[in-house]
Image (tube, rainbow, N blue to C red):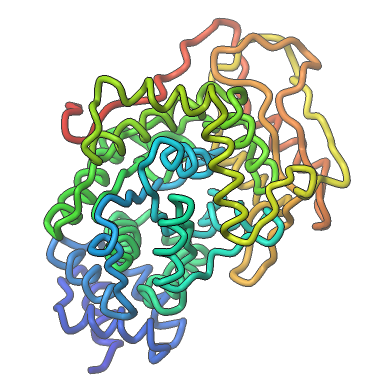
Length: 433
């Protein structure tokens, strides 16, 4: 097959055949297609889109490009969770030990940062010694011992996605709905978790900006997952401003520890609890008491203890004093008094990336001491000179003054108070827009 013909067909708005999508995915996974052709097809799909058949065919091809672990067959009660990406989204670091603390095992396939969003794998890399490159048998052993297996995508699972995911990040094709669906579900279905909770973000800091766009994505994910035998639910959550106050890697681990210990961000806790309740319901727990069980696990220290056990089981050191720290801290002051009326969340995410909390090119290293702390939220009253954010500068050479300007410009200040948007929009199964 001449793959250039497939690129031309999609470029011109045509429908790709199963064979052409096989060639795309399997060729990417096997290294048989050059990056320039893969990038061209990604851009063509991003611009022209794909229908439901094409999206499913691509997903199935991406699964076949590597191993299929079928963890759900071996541990049918294990839950996976996925977020469609946002800013300050530290949920996974709280979700996994919290569920383990109440006896619901977690088998989570996590990803690295994509675009302006920091990734769970990069955050856990900030924990000294933490490993995520486990074999299937080792993952099952982790689930049995500590109730959690945190896994990075290996070279053997959904190999095509590993290649295409990295290319999407540097070719401006992150926002494509069919590429998002195929990427998420190929990994989840290849790993084979029988239960999946989806956190679909919408707003200025998400890849889907409006509730209608987010609902479209959520329903596409649910339709594909359920058609392939996965128990799943999707909750739409707000991303019009950073969810948690920390944007980075080590700083987000610290924030997760604060929430697990009963403090930290109220907003981060609220979203995590909503997703965890959904997981308990899918696992067959009583919905009426799920919230009480989860709150008790935080209040009595069980959740924090579960974090320490999972870190040690994954080869890491849970001592928070060993987490990287910035070499320089700079406060960003409000230019005038007023109320925060809006936040350009994606802009703040890109500032964190440029500081070192993300990659500007495929092979760039993460700077774990770098990041951004958010000090004000929509609806807050701020006075001139009051901190809006704190820039954490690590080892990467950065333009600190430019970063300060970008952070300051990301906060919109008005004369009248506005209501903060609700954090939880609702379930994709019941939400009506």
